[in-house]
Length: 348
Image (spheres, rainbow, N blue to C red):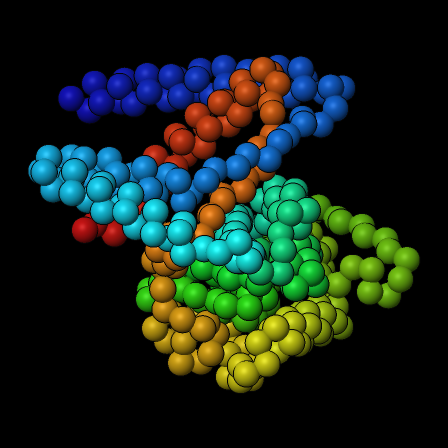
C-alpha cells in the first residue's frame, strides 16, 4: 500500500513539473513576443451605474409584481415625471451633479497606481466643483514611495477643489490609510480595518551561515551610510542605529501627512502601528461615517444623480495574453495549495 501511494505521489510530482515547464515556456515566448512592440495602449471605460441600477430595479419589479400592480406603478412613474418636468421653469438652470466612481485595489507595490493616474486625469478633464469623486479603496499597504505616489494622485482632486469621498469596505491600513485620509469624507464598513500608522522593515542576514562554510563577502561603498544593513555582510551596531533612525524619520513623515489631512486626529494616539475596525476607528476620528460603499452609492441613486464608473484598461497583445494566462494558472495552483495548507492548520 505504501509503495502504491509512493508511486502515485511520484507521478503527481512529475505532472506538476511537466505542467510548470510548459507554462514557463509559454510565458517566456509571450514575454519575448512582447519585446520591442512598445507599451500596450489603453483606454478609459465608462459605465453608467445609475442606469444599471434603474434597469435592475425594473427587472426585479417585472418579476415579482402582479400585472395590475406593475401597470399602476408605471402609470404613477409617468405622472411623477410629467409633474417634475412641468415644475421646471424656463429660468430653472439647476446643474445636475455627477458622481465619478473609481476603484483602487492595492498590492504591496501599489501597482494599480498606473491605472489610477490615467483615471484621475480623465475625470479631472470633465469634473466640476459641484461634482463628486468616490474612490472604493482596498489596500493593506506596502512600499512607502509607491503609496506616496498613489496618495499624490488623489491629492490632485483636492488641488482642483473636487469633493473626494473614499469608501473602505474591507481594509485601508498603512499605505492604504495614507491614501484614505486624503478624503473630504471618509466612510468605512463597521468591520473594515483601518490605521496601522507605522513603518516596518525586516532584512534577513545569513552572514554567520556563510562564515560557517568559509564563504567571504566583500562589500565596498563610497559614502558612510550608502549601505546600513545587508543580507550577506556583517552588520554593525552603527549601521543598525542608522537604519532605525531612517525608519523613525519615515514614521514622522507619515504622522505629519495624516495630521495635515485630518487635523482633528490625535496623531500620537493613533500612530502606534495598531489597527482598528470601523466601529472603533470612528471614535478615534480616523473616519467620518460608518457606511458601506453600496449604501453610499444607493443614496446617490435615490437623489437621481448621474453616477459613472471610470476604469482604465490596457489593450494586450496576443503574446501578452498567453503570458498572463500562464501567470494566472501558476498563481491559481499556488493559491489552491496555500488554501489547503491553511485549512489543514486552522480547521473550521
